[in-house]
Length: 170
Image (cartoon, rainbow, N blue to C red; front, side):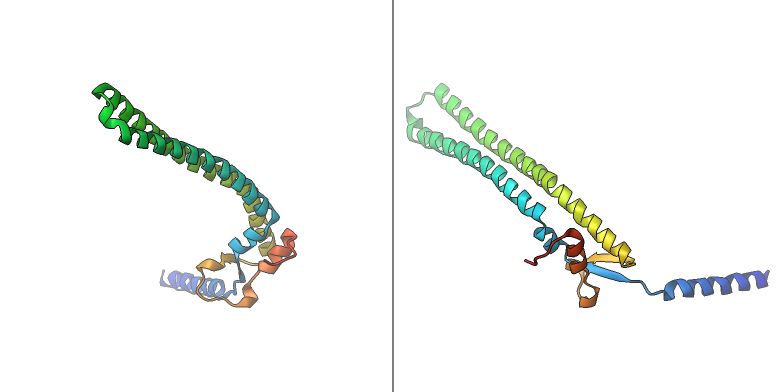
């Protein structure tokens, strides 16, 4: 029985040493920088800017309307009877609530639009990184923004750029 444990222990140590002594190849990539260099992202940013501009114009219009009504209310509230005063306050409260709801919905729509526009580019970049990793027999690819120290020889940015067809560095 002791011999079986000894043989199993020796085999375990042998396989464990072989497993742990293997050299793993790894690389790192400046994910955000390459993403911003992709033409798809430049187009997405342009589309997103147009989308946001339209939303911001509507918010500004609603805010201006609210401020105008608030100034008019504050200027004339002494002249209103209680019924009119209550109605004007309710109108202002509803308008303020409407603006806040619109802003929240606009932010959700903006996030959804950003995800929609960036999605294809992110998938393309992820695929390029995986392809480069497989082609270069890399076991790990890390984003460089989480690394405290890295050797330039482990940087795969140029390989990923080449795979994506990006020729210029920004």
